[in-house]
Length: 173
Figure 1 (cartoon, rainbow, N blue to C red):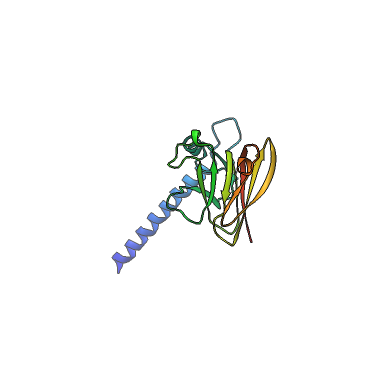
Figure 2 (spheres, rainbow, N blue to C red):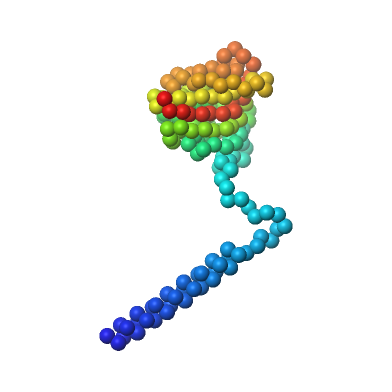
């Protein structure tokens, strides 16, 4: 019995030492002052698109920001995605140049992007989603309702000047 009591007491002392050491390390880290003369980095989410620089390099499109519910995916092997076609193939080094697919992961979503020379889009075949595409033609923005199950033309796909797709927005039906 005495050995058990001694082991329990020793374990408690070791636990307190570990906790104290951890608390000291946390306290020291929390009170550290940044080495730069600027403000500390913000912890506020800026909604910038993850991996945007690599996507620009590889696919030739700019993914700016969004709520995380519309994500670029490889078109091969994906169904039920928003599809966009563009004459941007010289800048696109993907497996299907000029063809971009976006997976919607919630009942709504928003993605600001820049796909130059976009000319048509197709909804994600989900009746619960209404897809809206905002395009700019000669600098003037306009919003187009994208057909849920078929293709919708805009810009050159609708007999107009070239368009840049600047936003995809999904709302509930």
